[in-house]
Length: 233
Image (cartoon, rainbow, N blue to C red; front, side):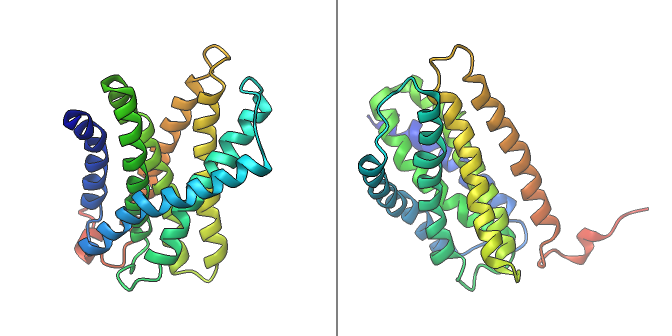
């Protein structure tokens, strides 16, 4: 069991360290990062579970081979619910903090919350499915959660310092929901041969956009030394 736990947690730790390293100019307090992670691991899961129970009552989905029902499940039930549960924590716990003092911090805290959520989810899946599940999810579901967090955090980071705070925050939530929805939708309709490839395509697109989002906020950091902006001619 210990080996399975390590397998479940390892990709989470790698992504956290990667984002922490990418926060080049003003590192966040480790206490706040840990709190965000734990809130994602516990708080987001609780919020998600409650909303799921509500959907089971008001919007029961019975036909597993119905493309429209799987579309609703992917985007509304799973995508919106899970990303909303992360969004709430970033919006009302991390974003108001004084330490949240540059746009890149939106990415940092959103990823920490997302990795907390992914850690709890991944432990359950890996303990149930074993080594194959753990290895597969290390290269699919876990980085997918990271990309959702980066895309959400990019806009929530901009929102903190913008007059259009509400619209940018919601844009971040909707973008994360959109990518989460597409990723899950192609997996949910696996009864259609070969359509699962769409999940990997959406993941690759999400990774590319995440890389650009990280680079953009790094370049625009107000803590970036002037020497970093100097070009050698």
